[in-house]
Amino acid sequence: MIDFNPMAKIEPSAQMGFSGNRLIRDAEHRDETQLEDALTNKHARYLVFGGNKVILRHSDNGSGSCLRFNRDEMEALDGDVQTAILLGTDESAPVLAVTSPLDLESLKEPLAAYDLRSLLYSGHITDADAGAVAQAGSMLHWHATNQYCGRCGTASMARIGGFRRDCPECGLRIFPRTDPVVIMLPVSGERCVMGRSPHFPAGWYSTLAGFVEPGETMEAAVRREVQEESGIHVGRVRYHASQPWPFPHTLMIGFHCEAVSEKITLDDNELEDCRWFDRDEVSRMLAGDHPDGLACPPLKAISSALIKAWIESG
Amino acid sequence: MIDFNPMAKIEPSAQMGFSGNRLIRDAEHRDETQLEDALTNKHARYLVFGGNKVILRHSDNGSGSCLRFNRDEMEALDGDVQTAILLGTDESAPVLAVTSPLDLESLKEPLAAYDLRSLLYSGHITDADAGAVAQAGSMLHWHATNQYCGRCGTASMARIGGFRRDCPECGLRIFPRTDPVVIMLPVSGERCVMGRSPHFPAGWYSTLAGFVEPGETMEAAVRREVQEESGIHVGRVRYHASQPWPFPHTLMIGFHCEAVSEKITLDDNELEDCRWFDRDEVSRMLAGDHPDGLACPPLKAISSALIKAWIESG
Image 1: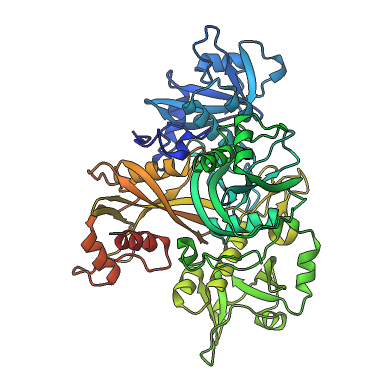
Image 2: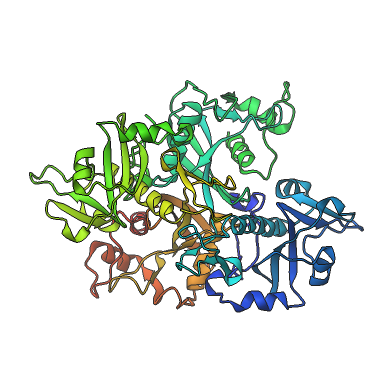
């Protein structure tokens, strides 16, 4: 078993939303046969996407909703598979992701279409399925945006069940993309710095974040992003946890870092507010009883996990 | 100063090769004017690439070789700039990277062409220039392989000095790619596991490594890769350091991890040998006095840093 993890109960990364993937991918040992075999395997199960939404069948007896459809159920939904990728195997049964030109408006209970964020927070699926659907969403977006070779413009072809695309003209091999993002809580003693994106619900404050750029370490990215967004200088940087985040194919890498300056200079391109919070105020935001209704993002997001870990360390 | 780092002397990531980049990129606040301004700025300096090699001017007085050419020197090399990107600014002067159809065979002393790995180990350049050239090499490779829109196949256009490419047809925005790779030393008490790639020089053994795949945490990637390559099951995973690695645009993320099983099952697609080493033997490999001539990769590579940190912790 590849996903043998004796640390699952205590490792911070294993507590994050989308982190419970248990599929055996074996991407480095695939050839062109596994996808074909999977498509004719009667034990195969399908995650079915329409655009960036995935289809869930709500349970009618309370024992759990289901993301995994068998071949007949999948074909009954629409049947016109556009893209099929082999995510991996689960207890020897193949698990695939397919896109379909479904009319999402016409879906009837017990079927419903969810974007991946709503699905995560719905509580309807297992951690293992949340991990599988994150993998599926990331890979399908990558296929949709890599239909053509970036080097020569020729139509490229999916290979090894979707873990690679090859250009038949110039031979370029393209692998699924995963974008590292640093996300961090700057702290100084009993205070931390949080910011508010204009896209946030009213009252939310959260950690700062940004993409790692070519030619920098993760720690350099933490310092650069904190300084760009808040003007704060950062000293020590301590890794906490990572999280796959399928919007569209990001790896969130979470840190606590030491703020070594005080003055906040807001980057108003990125944030509509950024300020210091003391530990008591943040505790109330996490608990949902802040007097002014301020709050942090929901648990399962690494931002909240970073904030909660700081509160619990105090 | 963005790159203010009071931890530079003790932070493990700051000790790695290619980690010393000090350019201010300010990529999120650029428009279409900065590159134009930089190309007419007489203080601008150019890193000049021919293919995947960069031009170095050896010092004739021992005071240091130079990667940075002014406009006249750059044009005297060949003058026919193919791609120009604005890496960032250094004390307010723009630093650019350009590709040129140089005939590398015709270069004469004091000029020489180096691939980036040889340049790093040559000792000819500063840590800051090693970081800048890593950024340049990664970005230029990304531009070369993203000339066309992956979604619709139309020729794409470099924007904001090369930190983005836009499709004029479908509007897709593509950002420079950075591929996260986990690299790790599995340890158990006084022993560790190292492997030998068939591409290594004779006698070399090193850490295991592999790309993070979509939909997994970094810790899950560590467990999957160690198990795929060596058959070893992994318990605890502890982050050590990261390193930009421009082959072609990778972010190496280094870990020590706890081996919780003993039997090695070699993946002979990836490795030609993999075995347990005890601490004394590894010490001699690092020191260069192993009786059978076994060795680890050179310092400045994160693999050696992980191995050395384990030895020094014992």
